[in-house]
Structures are given as structure tokens and as C-alpha cells.
Amino acid sequence: MKKVLFAIPTLGGGGAERVLVTLLNNLDAEKYVITLFSIFDGGINKKFLNNKIHYKFYFKKLFRGNIHLFKIFSPDKLYKIMIKDKYDIVISYLEGPTTRIISGCTNPNSKLLNLVHIEIDNPKVITQSYRNMNEVVNSYNKFDATIFVSNTAQIAFQKTFKNINGNFLVKYNTVDNNLIISKSKEQVNDVNFDCNKINIISVGRFTEQKGYVRLLEIINSLINENIKIHLYLLGKGELENKYYKFINEYDLNNYVTILGFKDNPYKYVRNCDLFVCSSYQEGYSTAVTESLIVGTPVVTTLCSGMEEMLGANNEYGLITENSEEALYQGMKRMLTEPGLLQHYKEKAIERGKYFSMEKTVKAVEELLDNL
Image (cartoon, rainbow, N blue to C red; front, side, top):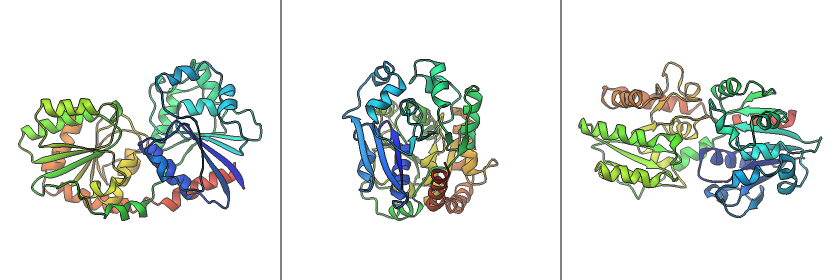
């Protein structure tokens, strides 16, 4: 049996963390001894790990300035302090501090992998976890493979980091389609969806990347045009108070509801008429994937992975340019053009059948077996 370590900063409420837990829970326990190392203990997704996964952490709580602290120590020193044990395969599951730490592995018998989950067109996204660009290049060049969650994420990375060489692969995120469909059919008891309005939902961390401020601006504009809508935001994050302030300032309390984090987001998405992704950046959006699986039509900005999911010609969802004006026009069209919402609902149901947990887990196992 191969000993495999996956490393991640935390098991917080993001899509990548949820995808990782789904993957680990479904890898063949007869073939691999799986250990999950989290730099910081806790996180909403920790409770979903099954008991066959060995769990380790270094710090009990997340603290400010941790990136600066880590940069005091070299990658090999951090690996020796935090990881210690020997593994056949060591995987950094998110770009950033764990990639730097894992690059410090000095065991010649360990195969090293890292995953990139976002489309990176600005080196600062990664370099803030490193001392300088030379260290970034040296770290990434120590890995046996760099894995991207979409083709566009790989293309952006190669354009941004021309000095990083290596084995570049694309492996799509693992989602448990059968579980998602089953849980989406559970009853919603804490929300009364208004059948006289078009109910819109978005799911994600409340961070700048997700573009929820511009989404709220768009909702305000659409309401002022007497389009009957209600927006539900499902998630948590540091910008939550900013959203509440906007909602109060523009008197949107009857039109926008912040639901917070939910263990089962799927039943809310299934009961809404439209899913909107307003992100500035994505890798391969878990939330959009889940929306298609439950049959809720999608409007999204053009970011990494969307054309792979929805088609370059908007076959399975409506993709707009990545600007507030373009997203506004796309949402308005979806909400007002006769028959368009129903058309994309049918296409979402069709496309949702494409996503298979068995297929993506098998692809990862083949990668681990062939290293």
C-alpha cells in the first residue's frame, strides 16, 4: 500500500476544501494509506472526513501574519518541523504555503505533486507566500507534477511563470454527484421562496475574488427596473459586514438574503431559478458544477474553467465578459428574454449528467499508481 499525504492550509468552507474531502473519502482504502495534514486545525469541512483518513495538524488556530512567520524558515526546515514522517507521495492541494512547505521534502523516494486551483495572471497571488520569485521557481521545479483543475488555469500559469518547468497535467475536481442529487431533494425549512419572483442564488466565500459587491450593485439596478427578483447569498467570510452595510444602505432587505454557511447548500440551489457566478477569478468552480448537477441554470463571468463546463458557445449556460456591465446585461437577458431561463434549465440538467465522481476519482488513482 502506498502512503500518501495531502497538505492544505485549513479545512475551511471553500470549494477546494470540500472537493478534497470528497476525494479523500472515496480513494481506495485497499490501495492507499491516506493522511491529511492541515497547517491549522479545524474548519467547517473537517467534520466530513471519514474515519479511514489519518488527520494531522500543526497549529491549533489560524493566526494573522502566519505567512510572514513561515518565510523566516526555509522550506526544508518547515517540512522537517511540520511533516516529519516519510511518505511515498506528498501532495500540496492548494497553491501557497503548503506548496512551499512540501517543496522542502528531502526524501529522494517521495514523489511530490501540487495542485493549482485558480487562474493566475498575477505573480503576487503566489509570491506572497515566498521570500522572492527565485524561491517560487525553485520550489515548483522540485515537484514531479503540477496539476491544474482546468485547461485555462494551466495556460494562465505557464504564461505567468515562464521559468517553471515540469510535468503539467489537468485533473478535474471530484464531486459526489449522487450525494449532491440526493441531498438537493431534502426539504428547505428556513426559507420561503417567493414563487412570484425569480429566485437567484450564489454560493462561495465572502471574499473580494467572488465579486459579490458588483453582484449586489447589479441586483440593485435590476430591482430599480422593476424586475421581480430575490438574491440569496450562501457562504461566510471577511466581507460579510460590508454586504450587510450595502443591503441596508440601498434598502435591499426585502430583495437580498444572506443565508450564511450551510452543510447542505444543494437544496437551496435546486430550489432557486438561477445560479450566478460573479467571480473575478476561479479555477474550476465547484459551485457551478453543483448547480448544473441539480439542474439550476447558470449565468457566469468568463473565468477559468467556465467554457469547459458550459461550452465555448454558451451551450449549457450563459457566460459573459468579466465585467460588471457585461454580467448585468447577461443577467437581464436571462431574466427577461422569453423562454431563455427554461432553455438553460433543460441544458443544465443535460450537462449535469456529465459529472461523475467515479470518473474523476479513477483519474486521480491512475495518477498515483503511475508515479
